[in-house]
Image (cartoon, rainbow, N blue to C red; front, side, top):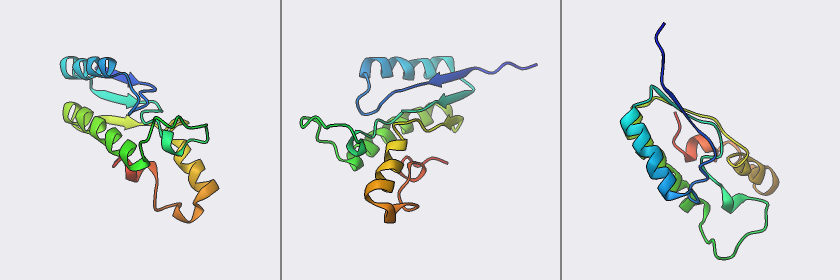
Length: 119
């Protein structure tokens, strides 16, 4: 029986993640060379489409958040060579809920898989 090294990453909340912790994660991926990386939800924060009250100091638009998430996903992708699984969490689900409530005509045209360029 062959053992696989699996790295599980919960709740990163990009772009509001701790950059030092994230640097450590990237170093672990690079040095440990896991066979699989599993994102178990809330990799992106989706603050801009949250129903919660907004801090006016946080001015990121959805496009800004998505660009930052994609930049970090690209960094992981470079290290794991397509061996990753992405599970949506409640923060990713903020987009679907926002579309349901405020822009239902965009359903099917705008989703996490497309925005995050997931395969």
